[in-house]
Image 1 (cartoon, rainbow, N blue to C red):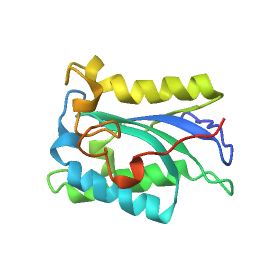
Image 2: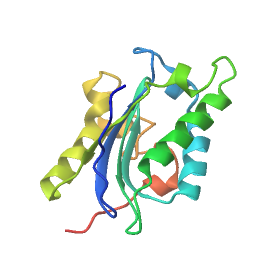
Image 3: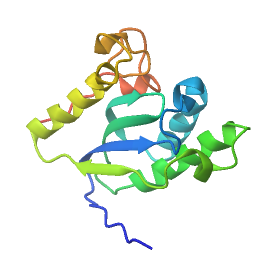
Amino acid sequence: MTNIHRLIIPGATYFFTVRVAQQGSTLLTDHIESLRFAYAKAVQEFPVTCHAMVVLPDHLHAVWTEPAGGVFYTERWRRIKTRFAQAIPAHQGAQGIWQRRFSEHAVRNRDDFQRALHHCAQNPVWHGLVAAAEMWPYSSFSKDKPALGEADRGHQISA
């Protein structure tokens, strides 16, 4: 078994990519309300500052700043994945829906932060889903509503 060594820095900002097991699936957008519920419960239990989030049909990206008192992103993602899987009756647990791991990148500076936000905003455009970032309804950059809840909108990181 591979040992995953994650960078654990309380109060740090991270860029995440989380994927479903079946590439090309539309599971996340087909069941967006279940994903929103799973996210809301997880961040209620383990608060985080969400700067940006985008949900695509088969993966999602997020930019989160962990609280100063600890780093809980692994548990937060575990709970999101598990609750979402439990809400989809045709699937048998989180292992059948999600890729086992997720990727995280510790944001190092303001330019890195801007690149992470840009990636979240433009990802639906790059995948050919919309012509402009604000047209994608499952994004914190949407003109209509944020990716997973009102908590996603309007957060800024200080210098």
